[in-house]
Length: 175
Ligand SMILES: [Mg+2]
Image (cartoon, rainbow, N blue to C red; front, side):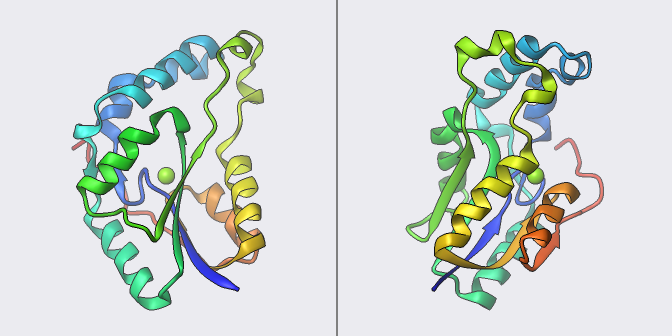
């Protein structure tokens, strides 16, 4: 069976806090205003990614994992929406973090015509999304390692029997 490792992007190898702060309306999310929240998520997704900066320790961790496990494939499994694929790929390439061995898996974008009926609790949760993607990956790959900065995502990987590193670098600066 082929081998792979799974890496998260935001908070793990990339500090995108500045862009998040500028565009994501967490207040709308907290108040349950789905339309406003998703609109802000769209703006965040389509905004220029040049304010995103690499997290050096995260990139070192990625490089270490690649040399340690020599995986056939490196999956970036990110909860960023797939409508922002080009921008994310560009950012990864600009930082030499993308080649033939890498696969970028992104969360499906929300269908515009269904947004009106959504409740916050019905949104596709990160943990469920990461579980679904990882189950698919495991059909074809032995997952040697998963790295994520979100504890609840780490639990998902652990429960699927995957060695997991919780990438918690304390508070990231607002670059
Ligand atoms: Mg993350």
